[in-house]
Image (cartoon, rainbow, N blue to C red; front, side, top):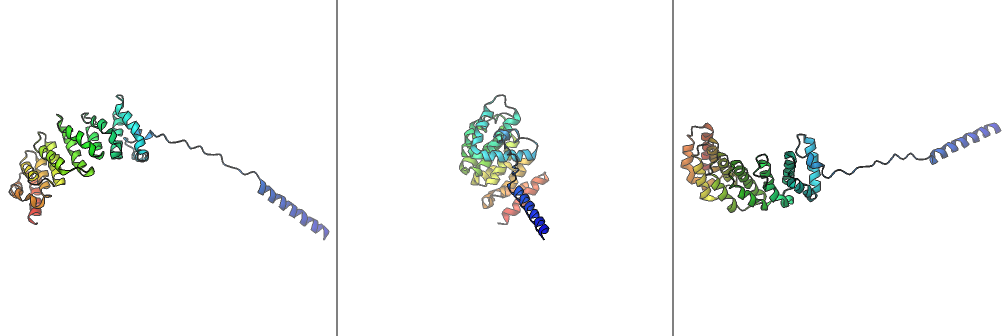
Length: 264
């Protein structure tokens, strides 16, 4: 039995030694991963690209930065050598940040006369809060009909987003109905319908627009009157006449509005 006991003791000793080895073996710690901080300015090169994934990532980064993105936005507007895509990215950033970017309103307004930037600048202002109303109103006196059209459209949007008092906005829309440019007139009648305030003066302006030489204006006016309810009663004769308009789309919209108003 002695040899057996010696063998058993040896096996136990070996097992103990193996256990101690595994218990006390040096742990293999993986090397630390060094995470480089993201470039806080990376968003401006991605926000105005054709790659949706890059735009989404840039938008998230911009929203996370919030006011901390403003120095780069100001710097971009003040840089005479900034490329058009970069300036458009800064304008888009102002739209995303909204009133947070209100300090950039004067710089955004300066971009309105540039035909390559007019739509983007107007859209940005429509998101930037009540203080953007003044520059947009001033832009309505521009000799460029595109500037007038986009400024008026943005005023219509800003009315709800800011919000603005209808008494400040509706007169501008009514005046736009008589603008020399049909695009401005179409925007004016469209937003009169969207806002549907202004009472008899707004309805009278839309009745005038039903006789406009441009089809888009007449069609938009016929549609807009449908949102005024009982206040549009004085427009019924003009709508009946418009229901016989030579353009089928104008005639259809006038007919739809007549049915809507007479059903009330």
